[in-house]
Length: 230
Image (cartoon, rainbow, N blue to C red; front, top):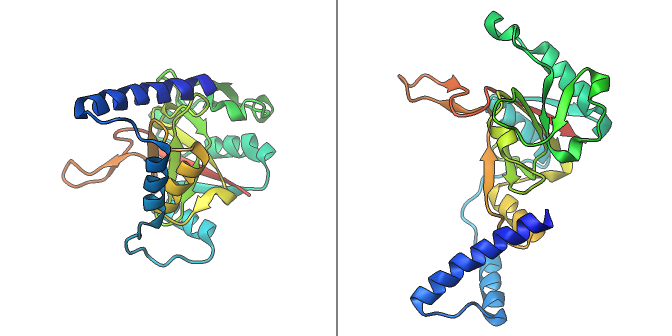
């Protein structure tokens, strides 16, 4: 993970260095960086909707509004059984039901869970593109919109949330923030800056391009299931 982050930052610094050279400007010194960070911190935010005290309840409701399904679990060890229940309950068309598989991929942080004990075949690796199920965590979640936030990294392969037909995301209740502004602030605080990419997912992939009819699974998962931990 450290090597991956260092390589990304080195590539970014090289690009910015070429831009500064073309503009005939030197890199930011410590004083300029402090001034820039103070400006960002003091910048007034635009109008924001009032949020209820219970951000978790608001997040769950908005996630359901966005066509996600949700289940609340009490412990990390309950994840495999919850995944198995969800897969068993899927109401698929006959042509897909025949292909339903209890196998898939997960992020490395879930490699130690007892998947086989729940009747699942889950491999802790990035998806190769042909996996039907992807199990991920999330950096945080946004209560205002029911959105999951993902930051890129060696241990958080984003493709596992984007390519499989079914995406199951484990979301910690203490990582639910009010709005997008709070999510970006958390990213800056915990990453020491912005990562290479940030992805935000609000429910299954969809499009309304054809006759304004909403179709799920157009550019990614057909279904998104959330396991709220805590």
